Image (cartoon, rainbow over all chains, first blue to last red; front, top):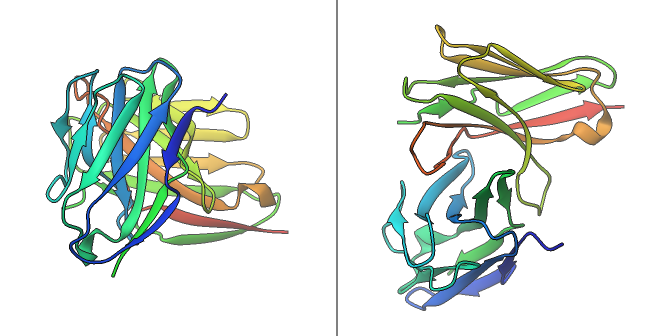
Length: 110
Length: 113
C-alpha cells in the first residue's frame, strides 16, 4: 500500500540544468498537486491537476512545468534550474479520504 | 501576504499537559480548515479538520476550535505525549477551489518527558 511515491528523494543540480520530479499515486485519485516547502513559509502550491490531461497554475508556478499524461502520475519539470528553486518539494493526491502526501524530494541548486 | 498565519514558530510543553497551537486567517472565503502533522523527512499527514459551520471538532486527544468572527482556530492536544513532537501545519481551503490548500508556516511542538 504505497500511497504517494516521489522520485528521487534527493538531488543536487547546477544552475541551468534541467530535471523532472516524478510523483506516482496508487489510490485512483483525480486531483494531484505539487507544493514546495521553504523555511518559515509553510507549503506553497506550484501546480495542480484535476484529472488526467489537465494542469493548472498554483501560487508559485514560475520556472516550473507539469504534465499529467496518466492518471496515476504527475510530473514536475524544471527547465533551467535556479538557486531560488532550492527547496523541499512535496507531491499530494486528493480523494474522498482527503489529501495524501509523499515524503518529499530535497532539491539543491548550486 | 500570508492568508494563513501561525505566529508561533515553536512551542514546548511538558508531557501530560495541554498543547495549544494557534492559527489565524484573513480570507473570508475559506470554509474548511485542516491540521497536518509532519515528522522530519516525511510528508505531512492529516490530523483533524473542521468545517466553517461548526465551532468544535474532537477526535480522541485532539480538538480543533474555530472562531469565525475572529478568523482564528486552535488545536488542543490533551494530554500531550512525546510522540506528538512534530511540526504542525494549519491549512485552509474554500469550496470549489479544487481543494487547493493554503498553509500556514507551521509550529514546531516539542513535548518534554
